[in-house]
Image (tube, rainbow, N blue to C red; front, top):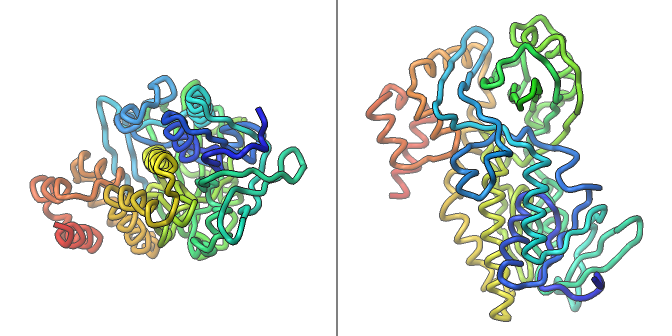
Length: 407
């Protein structure tokens, strides 16, 4: 393969958004090149992998990559709310396994993937994007394409250079240990809230099967200046009840990562360019969830890119249909997640205790819909039918008002 040839599409980033985009475009017969900076697809791990079983199955992810979770707990300093789901609605995924699977599927469709290739700059001709400049195996290399999809993650390399994204004003910064321990139930996950876990943010315990558990702490930066790895180290070695359940333990992996936390960027397209996934801020901030959105919106980007090239029109005017498509399904949820995150970011420990105390009585289906970001009329109907008292809360009032305004 001559990698100096011009491709139809170059995808910057071999994460879920990039691989989904590559798979969709290659399936249409387009020549696609994926450039991934890491030495291997799916590693190092930058995410905890919490997601939703039904939705991932619908997106084509095999069940073998999902570890089922039947019990979800929210824990504050003095209160705990617990919900049981049967069959399991929540799962923790094998990150490397899923990413490698996506890479395999994209490759089988005809996409070419190169690792150890870091995209550095947009390649321009007469001021227009015509590819990327990357460092591959230590050597500067130019790769040409009719269209570029920036799925480079939090760094948003091309989007920033092309003026579509500024420096992040707010982002999640997290640290996680994957440990081996026999003390934690493998079908239970916990989300821990309050300053005893994280000054501004939350902590989590996600079992992964075979006595493996992912335990982590995330903070909202730059509002919080704390080092999440130091917070994690202090917590897991503390005398807290949750920490004691994890002890003794062995650390087999350390994961570090950042995720956008300021909503989506104003514009996700330009001439010869689409932006998808974390690069575009397409993340549900409350749960820090981006993989599910990346898979679906990445596919939208790949399909739009393929159609644009087949019509020989990669102008911004044509590519804007991509933004209209993804916004129709996810813009409201992403925006509400961002707003709600701002509200709960100022909760005191006493406030979290009160909130968790109320959540104890909330129907599990409502919790699930809110965690998934399903902010729609069905959610409001469910609240009115099962837990109308929730409408007294500012956050629920905001959701109701936003949904009503869209009807």
